[in-house]
Image (cartoon, rainbow, N blue to C red; front, side, top):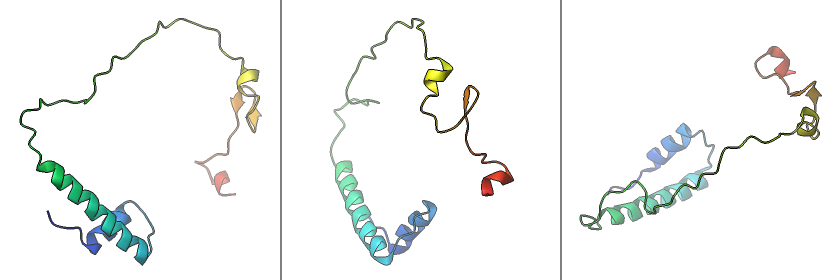
Length: 101
């Protein structure tokens, strides 16, 4: 398997919007190449006798009865809210010009 070049690591970092230093790019290149090397070794393992599976461990999904219960009152639910407006949590607007203030 070919190794990742510095340019490829820089492209991945840019796509992930990571602001990396030169040292971090070099370290990431080494780390990513080690990871890819391990995956290439796994690709060499003969798995022809192992049936395809979406999950390696079977787990039963325990379900509980969906029974109605009383819930918190608005006052109880909002008692630790930093700000509130009636029965709602009050937050700063993010889709208006007020958010820039």
